[in-house]
Image 1 (cartoon, rainbow, N blue to C red):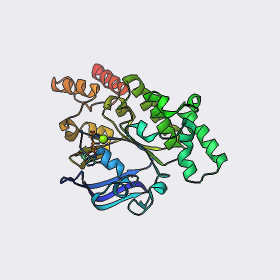
Image 2: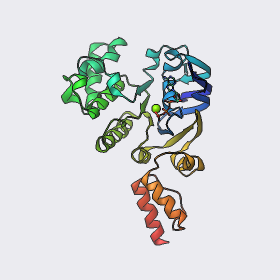
Image 3: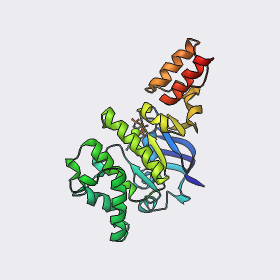
Length: 281
Ligand SMILES: Nc1ncnc2c1ncn2[C@@H]1O[C@H](COP(=O)(O)OP(=O)(O)OP(=O)(O)O)[C@@H](O)[C@H]1O
Ligand SMILES: [Mg+2]
């Protein structure tokens, strides 16, 4: 079954002449780690806003086509109901954190859904332990560091126990070390919770090693959706104006110098394997 399905979906923001999304046809299936990748302004955030009904229910504009979340139509199903299937952490966690303290913040969504207090405590315990924020439950969100805020935002989505966790540039406001920790944490959460993850991220070096699939966006179109290694080695990825991963750049150079002929690896261990093979040839 598809967790999310776009069928011939078009979207134009009110007041804009250009379509931000152009004939999107996508199927997101369970148990995948998907990297959403594309130049700035290509439509990644807009695509994500369609996945919990924010578009078209909250953003006004013109749309055509359909989006289904767990077979529920995003046009008619209330956003609160979709939020138990799809959890989204947007780019700037500060704007998402509104409660007096972290514990209330995390409980907020569950209270709104009418979940019993005992169940709420149990879920808070689990999600704060997974995100390692048990020690800051009494703090106000504005007292936290960027990395802590990002963890709280993730925990407040995880308590809803969604089937798919979507993160829009979760490391944009973090330093490289914290960025790496957050991406590693997201991978751990996927394994622990058996979740599907979709992540829009410009720091490709960090996410690529974990990704199973990639979706490439260009000018409002999803131009490619395939396994990570196929997309990484394709012409579309090569042509996009992105900050390419270091490993990619090195192996491209080796290929141009006729020193390497295989597939470009996506992680350090895969790169080491490729080098070993080269040595033994
Ligand atoms: N709230 C909005 N109102 C009007 N136009 C918008 C709005 N949000 C995005 N757009 C426009 O839609 C297009 C796609 O933007 P979007 O934010 O989806 O791109 P993106 O791929 O997420 O870019 P980035 O990598 O910079 O985050 C752009 O032309 C942008 O100007
Ligand atoms: Mg964006």
